[in-house]
Image (tube, rainbow, N blue to C red; front, side):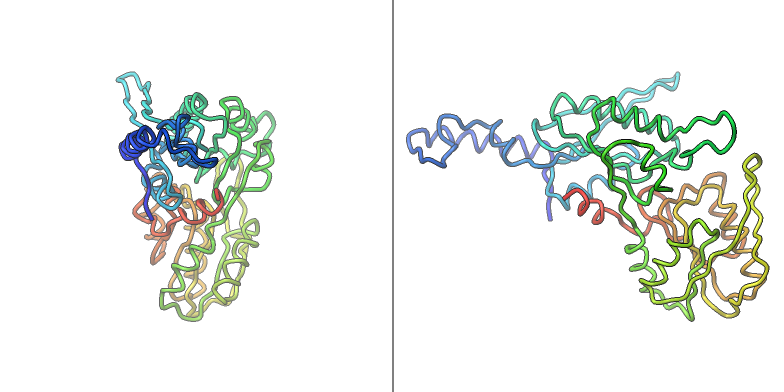
Length: 336
């Protein structure tokens, strides 16, 4: 596989222009390289996709571009002493489908503003702009949990529509409700299959898949079916005001079994830590963690390992040391 950077695209355009000028008098019905052929027309014909990499997802964007044989455009960010930033995007081909790849993980608001700015600028070059947002920030704010709370993901949808995004492609968004709140053409792909491939290579014994809460039961079940294992879902309670997590499940039979705790997002790691502590008391063997989005804020990775987790495995929707599973293929497939 290969992808075309902007310099390569310019070179190809020059070559095309040279040959079109030499063949001016050899016109055929289907030979559009005659008088009407220009480097611009060649570029428009050849380039189906242009991938613009936001700063938060540059490595993943490059992998997607390779899989699509697309033009890869890197952005430059400059931050001023007062915290404002300036984004520079150069050499965007016209009339291609533009894919702006940018996760909105912390710093969430900065990455979101950069995403919106890049999309707004891309409208000068194409009317078909897809926002590829591997990790969708604010997706957990999909309903009014407490009186007066703003449904932030709905606001994000309005902003994306206003700057010109025609479609959103994301990975394992937190809920179907969040997807609906965006009110824009969207596609949510799952990384479960890719995570399962990673764990199939491990020498696990008597594996059991565990969801840290009932809300993730379907995710755990799908993971279990793909890896050919049993699954359980724990009952938990989270205080909406304090964020404190309590495991309500009393007893489970996990003695001498290797466990995989499966979740979509790990932020502070509260649910994973409490679940691991509970499972260790039940005399399980090893505990692994599989998640799509590893935010791991406030030293969460160390806290999780201290609780007894052997290894944390996440995807590259958020670049971390734990990001050992690549989602570029499932995103490229969704785009195609």
